[in-house]
Length: 67
Image (tube, rainbow, N blue to C red; front, side, top):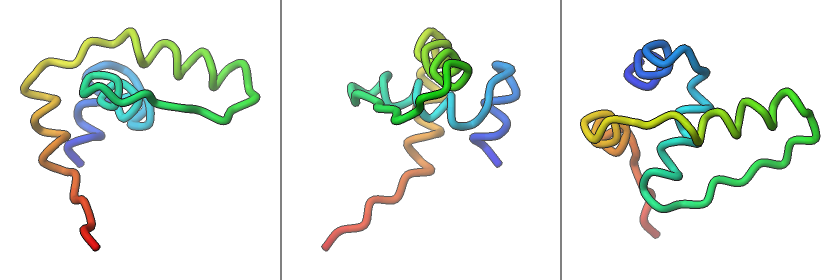
């Protein structure tokens, strides 16, 4: 629900916010899309600045499985 709230705040899809989040923390988000529409959405997402508090909120949602 928190990711959906952040996405709505920016008028974007949650997947776009995940792309932006990944870029914000130094990850290189990759896409396998062949759709021009989806590629444009992915590129638009990287242009959306996330507030540091939003980045922290999203980081709090991530659970990393350890072997």
